[in-house]
Length: 287
Image (cartoon, rainbow, N blue to C red; front, top):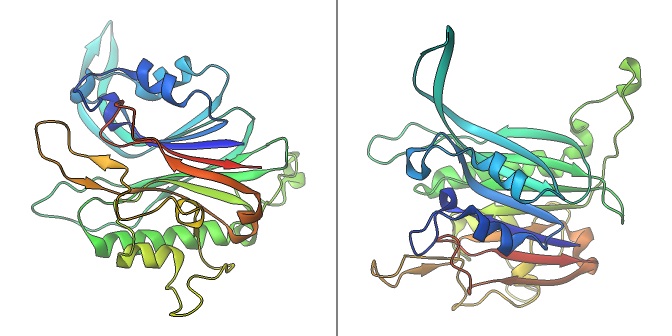
């Protein structure tokens, strides 16, 4: 099973070109795709329905889109009908196999006064994979405040780790004629976390390392797939400033899995060769 996470920057590449087709070609071989910065009605890309466009470009995949930020931009009357323009900003999951259920999470946030602070979110997909049901999450955290990111990570971990206790999208389904949904322990949490390895936010996600044993596999902590396979280093990065604006590079994007899934992890990597966004896709392969 191939997973990929990609912050697509509204569909705009490192070269400034808006090209959803290029992005689709980069990710189409993945079985499960987590996308961030998916928009509808954004003036930055001509107002295109980017969620709809990717669904069209990847017709072999099922899809779900969640827009935690949804803002009214104006409206008028056309042919006697009220029309409105809205800016929607959120996350998307596409899966080669059926998405049995989804949940949309609004992550904690606080009002800002000098930097734009969009409502951030995560979308959960319960996927009917051939090897058994698995959960996938597409996540995008705050880009300015470490304190806000820590709060968002702790909230997200509560939802992800307590999935079975909460019952997923619905419980006691037989009472209303719905099928019983599986409650799998295994999950892959992917996205743009806007944090660097070793930061306080990163530690909140994966736990602190012991001075002798390092980080042990534990049920209450995420496992960084890139770090586990040795693909995380001082030179690794998943975001870079566009050419001509500087040479800053940072590692901001991750694929986290549960400890029980570690024996099935075969590879994890960042593809720094593609130019579809200012971020670079993070790939995971699970047996």
